[in-house]
Image (cartoon, rainbow, N blue to C red; front, side):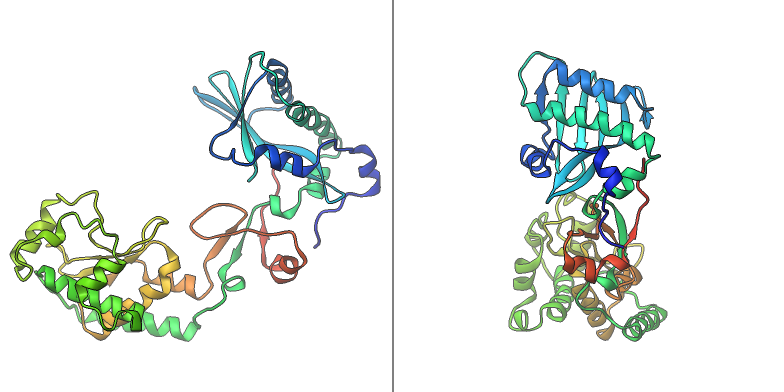
Length: 354
């Protein structure tokens, strides 16, 4: 299946007056902070547009309309792009898929001509959508403006084999069956176990470093006073510090820091489980997490790996990535011959909503 192409009969009915790159230029840098338009004529055009269709959802604060389509020209082709409208406190907010947003107020300030054209063109296109029972939308929305999903095995460069995955799971299962426990630990005990994790993940970079040096290099840095404990060999002092909760809001146990969400956490054995707990949040560190799991098993450390099976699914390519939509695992489709050849046939596209 190739990019949508508009048939000749349809092309004669659609004559977009706006170029895609004009819209892209005017909306850039306005994804989070909408471009403000204070113009009654444009406001009334938006109202006219929303009056033509039933709202998608409504509550006491806002009314929402999904799935409007704006016809445009791009590289000599006719396309249409989706956008939605929200009415909140008498103002309209328009959100254009991955391009930016508008905030429209009913006032008498001047506005650039293109913003008036956006809604005039959308109203005209709406008539064609209704006449074709939505077929024109299916033919004109390009695939970089559609959503879907794709399995990681089609886009990740390296994958673990099914055999590797099963071996790790089996080793972990056997480790848990030993029912190893450790009731209390000191700060030095904790840093020693963290050091095993660092050496497994970072190998040569970590081999000549002490546990404290490794912690200071790779951990979050907000230790919540953990490194200020007086007696690093005292199990009572460290466990008391863990339980007092004064470190809440800090990240003393994020042993691998990540700017996106969280990296890897190694929680000490709390008083009710008697085991360490290892967890990865940002799957960019998934391989490091698995190396840490293997090292803790090898060294017979009592621990649980909170999301081991999910991480292994990810590394084996069995996890779905969203296409053209933001999530923990995202893939953005580019309308090029390379992407069409390598990825298109593996994407499970969502139905367009009309």
